[in-house]
Image (spheres, rainbow, N blue to C red):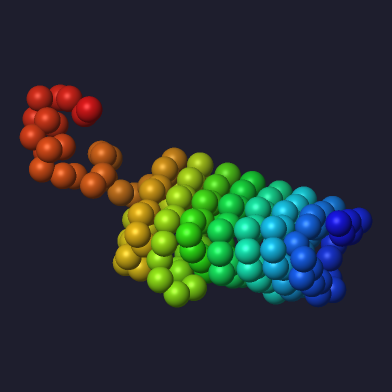
Length: 168
C-alpha cells in the first residue's frame, strides 16, 4: 500500500499490485502489475501516465487529461471530464465519465469488450472513432450528444416496431 499526501510528481512502480492512494493530482508515471487499485483524489494531469498489466481499478476525482495504458482488465471512474488518451486491453474495459468526453479511446492491440458511460456530452464524431476500432462489443450510455435521438443499432426488428410507437 502506498499513500501520498499531496500531489504525486515522482514516478512510481508497483510490481505486485496493491493499493495506491494519492491525496492530490498525479503529474508523473505509475507502472503497476497484478491486481491493483489506484485512487487519485485530484486530476490526472497532461504529463501523467498510468501503465497497467493485470486487473486494475482506478478512481480519478478530477479531470483526466493524461494517458492510461491497460494491457488487461480495467475499470476506471473519472469524476469530471475525460480529455486524455486511454488504451484498452482484454478482456474487458469499463469506463465511467462524470463530465464531458472529448478524449480518445483505442485498443492496445485488438478491441475486446468496452463499456462507456458519459453523464455529460460526447460528440458523435468521438463515438464513431471508438466504433471504428471494431471492438467485440461496445456498449455506451451517453447523457448528451449530437447524435439523433433513438435506440441504436436500428435493426430491421426495431424499424418494424417503431412504426407502431413501440420500442420494446
